[in-house]
Length: 175
Image (tube, rainbow, N blue to C red):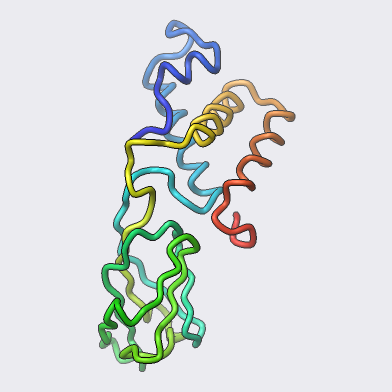
């Protein structure tokens, strides 16, 4: 789902169809959505399911690449670097949904996220629970990014940076 429509972009940016073709306008929309997701550390799109490998730090805590976790689907850990993964019951993992953090409970099948490269395999769903409603402030931010792509402006860039920081998943994890 797009964060903004072509009509919203044309209206906000004051551009006519003769000036920029639809394909170009929607390419800008796509780039702005990707930038917004990347810089805020979250997606404003509907649910997205991913399977990712991680390298732990030897603790019981793992920071996922995404926040706004809807569901942890599976977790497997290679606890001795032999290529065999132990399945960890998802009910033995505390999920901090908004922050994208997993913490192994005391009764988990493996008690730490091992330090071996790609020793952790996680499948989860993240994003907005519904893709039908993009928050209005996110729509506006997306429009500002597009406007700044068309007509670069230092004041608008600063405004965008400030708005992005206020929508970041975790201040310390913002890119």
